[in-house]
Image 1 (cartoon, one colour):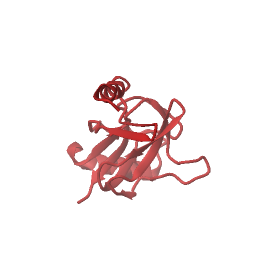
Image 2 (spheres, rainbow, N blue to C red):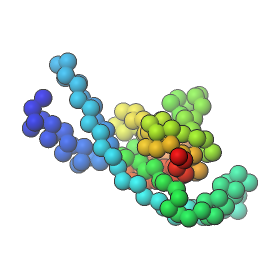
Image 3 (cartoon, helix red, strand yellow):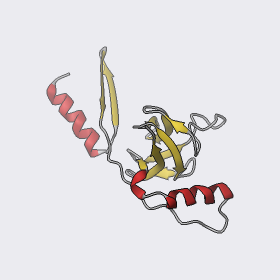
Length: 148
């Protein structure tokens, strides 16, 4: 693969806001990956129909300073899936401890299933989107409390 072809792939990633791109051609394989920014959003408001666990999670979020949590964002536009298959258990639940590199969810984009991994070890405090929900680039997906 020539430097010109690599540059074209990098421009493609930037244009379509892709976090990762893998190409295999004639026995040559290239995998490009870039880190996406992290933003901490304000927590969503509670509703009258919130469950007791949601109320407890919301209370914990409000009790902590906003910079003590890290937001995992959607690196692309697509459909959010919590599990690898409809009958399979979700990758993570609120309260789960996760390791760096652990798969948190899948985002389907243009018929491709993209595994979204944790960039740090931590505890999932809040899952901010529903299963099978459409997500936008940069949309917060998870609120994670880093652990050492």
